Amino acid sequence: MLKSLFIQNFVLIDNLDISFDKGLSVITGETGAGKSIILGALSLVLGARADGKSIKKDSDKCIIEATFDVSLYNLEGFFLKNDLEYDEKNCILRRELHASGKSRAFVNDSPVSLAILKELGSRLIDIHSQHQNLLLGDNRFQLKVTDALAENDILLILYKKEYNHYQALRRELKELTEAAARSQQEEDYLRFQLEQLAEAGLKAGEQEELEQEQETLSHAEEIKGSLYKISLLLQGDEEAGAVQLIKNALSTAESVESYYPQAKELAERLRSAYIELDDLAGEADARKDDVEFNPERLEWVNDRLNEIYTLQQKHRVDTVEELIRIRQEFEEQVEAIGSYGEQIEKVKGQLKESKRELIQQAGIISAQRQNAAKLISERLVAMITPLGMPNTRFVVQVTPKPEPDADGMDEVSFLFSANKNADLQPVAQTASGGEISRLMLCIKALIAGSTALPTIIFDEVDTGVSGDIADKMGDIMQDLGTKMQVLTITHLPQIAAKGREHYFVYKEDMAERTVTRIKKLAKDERVKEVARMLSGSALTNAAIANAKVLLRNN
Image (cartoon, rainbow, N blue to C red; front, side, top):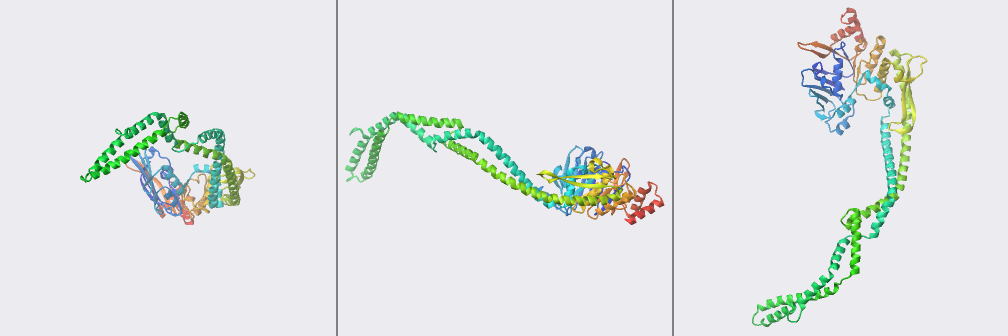
């Protein structure tokens, strides 16, 4: 519910601060007084596109602020999703327009995008004007009206959940089919690459071992000569070999141990050195015999390394371990090719089951729509007949679709005829502007009885009617006001008298400019305004008396 509206520096408005209440409120004023300006400001704070020309002349900034009670709208999820503070009793939407052309939007003092402001605004206020009457010819709007009266909310939530699942399965099947086709084309290539890597019989660490062996085999003679030289230096002839020299030194140290005790430590160290060098000499001699030049083995090692290097160059890697990983990936891809058929059949089965469930749910929704279609036709004709349309025929046609879509399996069309013996035709093709206005008013009244609607503002939808018809339209608005907050801009006294509250828009000439004002009328002011609407600017006693009667009867 709209609680208050504050406007500063907007077109002809310098400062306006007005509060609103529950029920039906009427807004009146002479043509050109600025009612449309107020409505334009309200549209901006609900997310409409801004125009720098909207700022009052000689002002730097325009501010529009609307305060709502949103306790009945179940909007906690919206505020949580958009990380906004939730205050159900005082939800404040603010729009700031700057002369530079910049625009800023806020919800409860938090900056928001225009898209978020617009989405929230659409849930708070429904501005119904002559322009919105175009909606009546839109099949999606007609479907929404039918679903609202059919009370399909929960059913549609469940249906759309299943529909999303169905669409996801269709995408998965398409992707699997395409992947299977691509893989089939690549299968020969993949198998060739895999066979080549598999035949190579690669082992982790193999390359390093082979490269070391290659070095050894390539320098066999040099290595053998070096080992021979080591052995010769350690165990050469009896006098010159290092082992013999250490042994002689050991004997010399042992010979003086009895009269020089310190020689014992020297002898122990020489003994350890002798044992170690003698062992080294034996090992060098033995390894010398192990090293042989083997051209056949060297050729095999070279060929094996060339095979590894060729594979690395082909696959653009540097190690055998990376080649092994690539081989495993090829194995997985080849294995996946064989499993595509199984996966495709599995998803086809799931898709078939999902479609069966979807059609079943759509059937329940269709039955609800068929029942609602009859109810809408009956109630709408009964409601609109007193509004100067006694020969109205109205049919909600529900036509099945061959395949389910996001809204079910139905096409809904409003068929209308206002004259006797005239064929029923789509409402947009046959109804006049005045007829569409009355139809829309009745439809909104029907919807309000079955679902919670935001505040609704009627912008001169009573254009072109008068007298008893205007009175009946006022009754519908008044009844609608018992279910929700309704604001209506009107030029008709019959409707103005129906309001629980009455607001008057007027222009006031200041010293240098003209400004638009709005005020809530007291009881005696309201009598005068309704009388003016009845008789014009010259208030007569008869007009005042008639105004009192109208107000008393409502």
